[in-house]
Amino acid sequence: MEINATLKSVGSKMLFIFNKIPLVMRLSILFFFISIGFVMAESSYAQVTEISLSAHNQPIGAVLDAVESQSDFSFIYDSKLVNTTRKVTVEVKNKNIFDILNQLFSGSDVVYTVINNKIILSKARLDNSNTPERQQTRRIGGKVVDLKGEPIIGANVSILNTSNGTITDMDGAFALECPEGATIKISYIGYLTQQQ
Image (tube, rainbow, N blue to C red; front, side, top):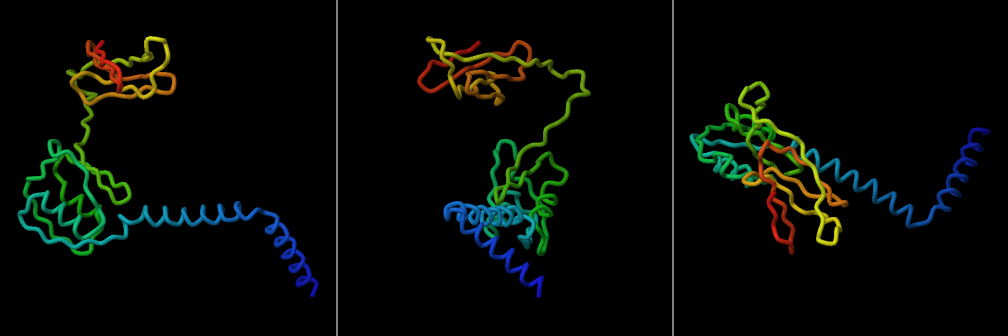
């Protein structure tokens, strides 16, 4: 009897506290937990989606199209880096995307990254740290400013004729790994491009 009275007392105190929390805050907490549920469900799509494929001596591009048609996955890749004309044979039944991609790209230099239902294909980076021909690089940094000395936020700073680059931060500052003797290109919309 005493335990029941204590529970009622605790319950009424909790209800009193709950009623003191503004409705907006209660709804915010509810939506927060609902959104966490959606994030958790979204991140497991790649693990739970099962795909069946039967492709004999088909180009990788056709196999990727078949995966896209059977699922919500979409592939992002540069056709100059990923050879989609290479012929493969794939025979899978109720397998997840990781098993299929491992089979498709085994023995090649293609790696993949799965982000939600987007799959990014790229070439594997080679670790050339043991090769004597490795080009020497150094870290350079600086600040991009206009004629008045005001920092340019978001200016593109890149190494000429490469895809290596960065953008300036809130203070116009940047840092970049650069090979010895390379030319740096700085560009921003509305300003003339500079090379240094």
